[in-house]
Length: 130
Image (cartoon, rainbow, N blue to C red; front, top):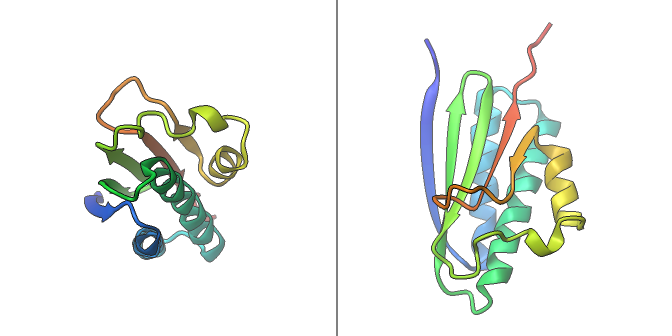
């Protein structure tokens, strides 16, 4: 049986809700079979993006969506928002700590997609157990 589930989370741009995104990511990743260290890495990467979205929203208005795509061998997390300044949230931080953390913890990251339906996507693959 092939796994192909999608979960959508919509959150207000407020710091007090970042824990909901982290908890959702950890629950999904754990259920998929990622080891505990990798689950923590995914949570940190999700937090970085959420925090950045909240920072660019400035007055904590608006909301953003997180799409978790669950497949047999990977978890893809995509962020979307209608916040005016959300377009390319890391463009002024390409050499910064947030970008470095996300790149270190995730296998694939698309920061500024040409496709304007989303802001950022990141993927983590499950390593085959030997």
